[in-house]
Image (cartoon, rainbow, N blue to C red; front, side, top):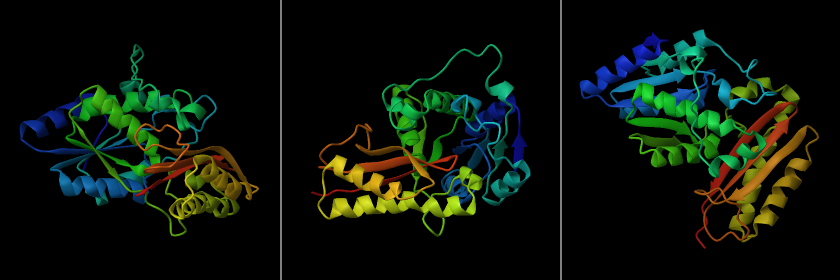
Length: 283
């Protein structure tokens, strides 16, 4: 595996691969790898000739009072894990290369970016869309891999790719979970043992909502209320949002007549966690 820090060098490597007729699979990450990241790398390895992984903690997707400075980092460990997952090129750029001092362009995906996490974190998805667009231009992938834990992110990226006519296929993989159901996240490392136990309520509330829907409850407000009641039992949990929405538009659903995505953001102590579940409704 080769570690590349220069934008010019990653562009050269991508261009050379394409000239040789190789397919490029790309996994954008902020590092501190866990099994969720590694599953994306392995999928890219199985479907492409060249696997490129980026490791970049993107400052523009963090708000002024968020955890940019303390976001977990361990480059040496990440290098070893990426190599073990079959990565060919690990791109580790400096912020100054991604955002030079005269940088003044941003990518905004309207409407989809303004809901759910976008409402709670203004500017977050502008930062996400911008950095992903830049990374796509640098790495020139045929396929890019994202986990469904960040469901809204995948919807925003797909819309950006379609609107800007970018020639890359977006591949999504299921959320990878701990043995107790907690969705894997780099931010899980912030949790104390008691907070870690409390965090199980996210998955439990999603499963409760799924059961109620399959039992015939079809009112969006009722399902949202069920989730709020379950999480409200936990003294360390504070709800940011609970959503029952259309999987494509992310518009809230009042009457459930088709598939829905149930998503939530909950602060466990000082740590904000997200999770979601797509519920398939046949009638």
